[in-house]
Image (cartoon, rainbow, N blue to C red; front, side, top):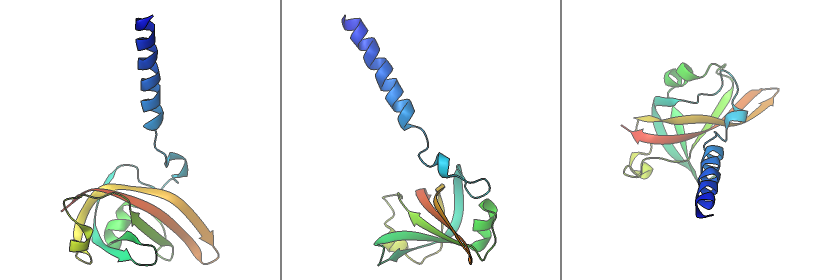
Length: 126
């Protein structure tokens, strides 16, 4: 009986980990509008008081390497996670190279163009 319970626990735990490992944003990714891999982009961060959130502003040249859309379309990139050993407050407005994962999480279209919303999970700041 003990071995059966251990086997069931092993099966259930492996199923839970497999279910959790799926990309929660996978269904929201749009071809040529999302990048699932790791990216290295230069730019700077700033704090938006109204949103109480950190945002990333990339250089247009770096941004266009990964995403192919017209420049009249807008994009907003919010930072979710970042390297704790580099406080963003210390480098606010200073151009740096950021390495991480950039994921589309929402999309909005209007007569004036389209706006894409991304989260950037930064793993390294150089």
